Length: 383
Ligand SMILES: [Zn+2]
Ligand SMILES: [Zn+2]
Image 1: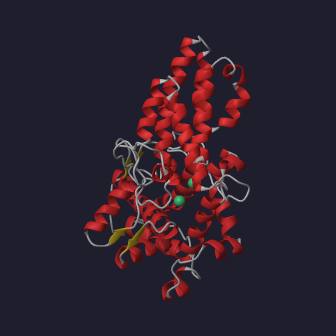
Image 2: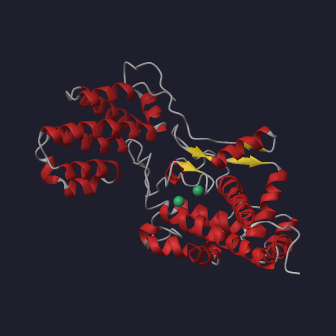
Image 3: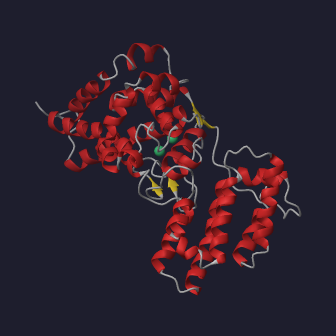
């Protein structure tokens, strides 16, 4: 009397659980995150309605609340107003209690009204999904028990219920702003957790996402894989999705004889690639220079890390090293000046072009091969 319609062995139940939770992950990353919060793609009515129904059944989350809280996270990233920054609140609080931070923010009406625009407001949203927010998960429990039996069904349901609170609110929001590698030195602390975005649907590539927030594709390097993007491409082939934006691929043209406003525009457009390539050259210079001056290897590692993420701390902590080397000083100064080109400032276009011309002249007359090479590449960026 306790068995369900499907009589599965234990491993069958494990596979079913993984499949069900994976559908939920796909719904979160494709529908809530990329489609609703960032408008990176359009979805056909079939997948859109399926994802909404599935999220109601398996998470009890309201689309407007999710999109609003997430947009606020991007707008206020790593500040006291960020709903879930591990840099502000501590990693343990976000990793293990991220769901409570989400629930708390969902009660902040100002957040929901200010950031929740453009989310579904149709008949089914107003009469079922929003007012009966928690009924879907009760229905899911009944379905699980009917299909798999009372005890296995309850266990599967339990895993479904903790899946998103742990993996999304905990791991992505916590670890994705704390541990991992960074492809891009964007202004927040976001990290790529692992290069293979499978378990959390591609959301593992969180540094790529924060750098190009409106891109429907989260992978960026050849060795990175984003399973959410694979599903989007399949939906597109079926005519059920339309990608609106992906991260720009760096475009290089012929060497420009003069650095002008077009060069400036191209550098600003491809700024994350410019910075990543500059850091690569700068790290080579640093490695050589630390070896030449027989400086501490630990300081060399610290130098390279801070050069990427925090120049001010580098100058404060490695002042004694900087006074010993003109080359390291130049590398640090050029890094800061490069970023100043696209930081929002009051400088006019003419002033910025003059700054870029000066930058190129100094790099090319530095006598440092890597900087000269980099500068020649910089002059080839095209819009
Ligand atoms: Zn984030
Ligand atoms: Zn996002």
